[in-house]
Length: 86
Length: 296
Ligand code: SF4
Ligand SMILES: [Zn+2]
Image (cartoon, rainbow over all chains, first blue to last red; front, side, top):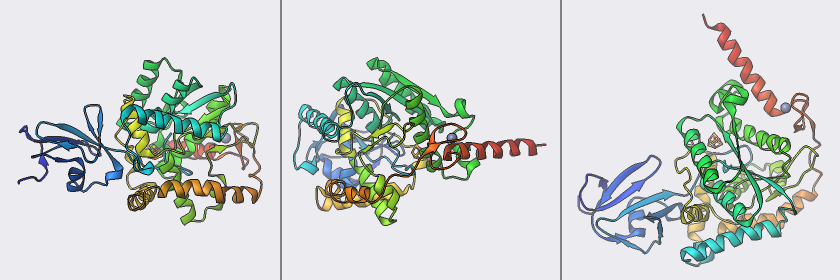
């Protein structure tokens, strides 16, 4: 499977937590945050990439044993006059 | 953050974000001295970030959370909101739709023939104003951000909703003695910035989405705007702020706001004899009792 994303199994790649729905993936090898988002087909503007309690920039590198979270920033839903922020 | 073509370290970002909100509040004259603010708090990133900033500024800001009764989502949202308030010693009012009106968003929507988000929006707007009046609050603050406002603007323009365009603003002034002013202090900052702020301030907010948001039109509009933003940074800001500068004043000058009067049943301001919320709950209650009496 090489560098492709696959479901987490407990080996030593980059562990990734995704949301909507909540799920975990693991990918092998070192790479940039922007590369991971592209590989997963995610819009770079619409997600935060987080390691621990730190925000990673798109040119940060992550590698084996890192655990990151890719968190969506866009909330949906809509009321008659505005999306449901309240 | 790309919009400003700058990368910030965490402390500077927090400073930048808070300064933007402060600027929104002062330039739009959102609060007057001694303002008693009711902050509508869903438990999501925007409303909790807003409440955090108001508390840090020393504003008199009480939270209002409406428990919509939407399965796990509502339970989690309420828990996060209560935890936030507890940790900061902040005052919080919780209104539970089911306890107050005997119905949740699902049964209200089904019984009234409205889409869930429409029943939800109507209920929230009604309750924000009602609870603000009941508690003598002088302003209701909501966490609508730049992305929300730009998406609404796009939707309103696509359908030429002239009434709604004329009312889209960071401050909705009191046009009737029973209508409490509404303000949106996050209108200058993006959704991404709210999320980053909440994360960096250690705010534990609800990340999972309301199940009714799936396929919402507003998400499509946000997606389109994000694509434009990716191609040309600053597009969203220019779109919404440009509207506020250029078109909104023209629309507002076009005519007076609609005449409001007290609802015959609940006394809340409305343009009709009975307000939309009372009509919706009555219809849903009638449907519920018809169903109960048809059971063997
Ligand atoms: S998605 Fe719809 S039903 Fe859910 S909270 Fe938002 S407006 Fe309400
Ligand atoms: Zn009424």
